[in-house]
Every structure is written in C-alpha cells, then in structure tokens.
Amino acid sequence: MKIKNKNLIFVCQVAADSLKVLKWLPVDKAENKFVSLEVTALPDGEKAAVLAGKIKEAFERFGYSHNPVVLSLPRNLATCRYIRLPAQTDEEIDKMAPLQASNYLPYPASELITGYQAIEKDNLGYSHVNLVIAQKAVIQRYLSLFETLKPAKLSIIPGSYGISALYNRVGPKEQSTVMVVDIDSLHTELAILRRGKILFSRYFTHERSHDSWKSLFIEEIKKTREAYMREVNRELPKKIVVLGTEKTEKKLTGLKSSILDIPLEFLNYTKKLHFSENFLQDILSSEDSFASLIGLSLEAPERSLSLLPQEIKQEDAKASRRHEYARLTLYAAAAVLIMSLGIVNHLDNKAAYLTRLNGELTGIEGQAKPLEDVEKRLRLLENRSQKMLSSLDVLYGLSKAMPQGTLLVSVTYEQNSQVAIRGQADGLSQVFEFVSQLEASKQFKDFSPKVRYATQKKTQAGPSVDFEITCLKKK
Image 1 (cartoon, rainbow, N blue to C red):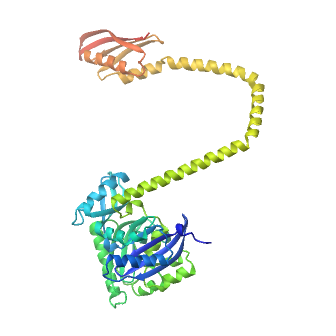
Image 2: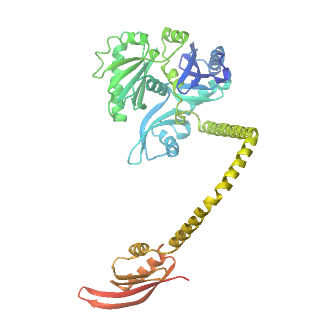
C-alpha cells in the first residue's frame, strides 16, 4: 500500500549534539505503522541558522512535505512540579497553572511557558497537577529551528510523557506506584507513575561506557526517591522498570541484586509492539533510545501538555474548532443528500403505502369512535381533578404554612368553596404570619385567607390567642 505523504506524522527530539527523527502513519486508534527512524549528528555550538538547515535536510531525506511534527522536549530543558490547585475544572486549572510558574523559576510569568497534566481531584475541592515549566526563550529557539519546515501543526511535548505513554501501552496494568527508566546513550530519564500518570520526573547525564556507570545509576535512583518524597510525599515506588532493548538489558547485568531494596525489572518493548523488520533493526543497531518518540506516536498527548506560547495555542484551538465545524457541516450535507436520494427513489412506494394506510384507517374508524368518547370523559375527569383542591392538598399546604408557636384545633373544608381553620397561637404575630404563609402557598393560590377573629386570653401556661382564619375561593 502506498503511503500518502499528507497522512504521515514526524516525531523528533533535538539534543545538544544529535537529532532523532521517527516517521509514522496513524492506522487507527489501536495501531500505528512505524515507517522509519534516523539519528543525525548536529554540529555542537553552531548558530541557529546552521542547525535549522541540518534539521531541514534530515526531514527532506524522510520525504517530509509540511506534515504535522511532534517535538519531544528533553527533560533537562523543563522544570516539573507536583502541585495542588483549588480548582475542579480544566478551565480553572488553565487559568491558575501559569500563575504558579514564577514560584519555581526566577523569571517573571511573561518569560515562562507552562503545560500540565491533571492527576486527580480530591474531596476538598483541590486538583493535583503535574506542572511543566519551560523558559519562553527555549521554546522560541525550537520554533525558529522548525520555522523553515512550515509544519501543518507543531506540538512540543515533554519527553517524559512519551516514556509514560510507552509504558502505559506495553507495561502491566497496575494501580501501584512504579519508577520507569529510559536509558539513552548520554543521559537517563526517570519518571514515577501512579495509575498511568506522572507524579515526578528527573534527568541525569552519564557516560554509559564508563566503569563507574552502574554505581552512578544506583546513586541517581537514590536521589530520585529522596527528591520524590521531599516534593510529592506520596507512596514510594514498588518497583523499577527499565525500558529498552536487549542491548540495554546487557548494560544492566549485575544491577538486579544490588539496587537498593526495590525490585528491578526490564521491559523489552520491541517484543511487545509490532515493528517491521527494517524498523526493528534500526532500533536494535543504535546506541540511542527511541522510547520517548515511540511513546508519543502510540498515544496522542493531552492538549494541556503542549508547551507552546499562548497565542499559538489559541490559534490551534480556533483551527481545531473550524475543522470540527467543517467536518460536521460535511456530515450534515451528506446526510441530507442521502435522505433526498432516498425520498426520490422511493416516492412511488411511499405514496402507495400512504394510500393503503388511509384505507386501513377508514376501516377502523367505526371501532375507534367509542374509545374516543371514553377518552374525552377521562380527560374531563382529569381536568376537573386538577382544578379541585383535594383534602390531602389542604392538609399538606397547612403543614407547610404553619409558623412555629401555632396549634390547629379544627379544619373544615367545603370542597372547592372555602377552608375554615381554627387554632391557638402564642401571639398575634404568629396568626398574621400564618395568613402570609397561606397567601404564598402553592396549594392556596386560588383562595383568599383572612383572619375572622383573634382573641387573646390568659392560661396557666401563659398568654394565648384563639383564632379562626377563613380561606374563601377566589371568584
């Protein structure tokens, strides 16, 4: 099957000295077709224009034609913080998250760009959020590097979320907290996940060929646990899972029995996903890790994680809405067209069917006449019952309207004519309050309550008022 260029999507990562590019084709929600990948060396310390040219050349070798591009931002270029916000909706979090950014980096909010993932909501009205913060200058640099490519859409997503997406797809479905590790040629990213969402992440550099690499790795695991408890203070990871290939697993030989008190597992994602033979060989032959890029291909990142300037986000949102309106309009037009064709094609059949129905209706008209008379009588009784106030309605209305300090002695209801209420009250104020409550009552809306008499008297329990209230039906 020939792959259409316009359907391809490119996922890439620009590091200090290299460019990783992965080309893939969305097939359906459950499957993606991985086409090819490449690692290109970038000149260290070169000007942005030279780097942009190198990036463009690499994309053109891949047959790039203004396709969508997803950029995996290295973890060392972003700050992540686990925070609680007094918000319950996405709209509230959208407004609050940027205001928190300057609390964690020594820059004004105008020089920072934020993204976030909502983790959970608690019973106190707070949302637990993993806040991602990047300097605007860093993001603007990436935008300038990719400007000449003119991508149909550019997304910048923290690379940790690619690792998370890959583990969520190929790892076991579990509720406990786990530390997921991605070991690249010159650095390692660690993400602590709970129920598939990142609570904490770190990044450290290393030289994997160095003799002390394993001891450095163990030390960084310890640091990660300590920092996680200081900042998040949630359940400690129950195990460590390293993503990679057979080559990565060989590098970890001897670590399983010596790494703290946490079980260490290795997850070979190449055996869990379907790759073409050529694509698989490219992965296995490389010293670099492609876990983040593959993860961002497997699962569409949440829009809230995009690290783009606010004005670009707003334009993207408008474009998405326009696209959705256009799609709905097209579907509506197609539905109308199909219905119109159906009406034209079956008009004769429908006319014959209507004629047959008319004949059948004429035949049963005589049988239906007595039923129609019964229905009219029932409607008459129903209307009458709805207009007349029942005894239960009277008692319910009185119980709702009686103020505190009143006692009913008798109630006389002359159906649909008047209601006479006799009773005792602690004072005159309760009597007049009773009348006011009856006037506002739904049950007595068609009656006019008035005090017929209210007589004060003294009793052993104290002063009391005997009263009678009459409610006459309004004319």
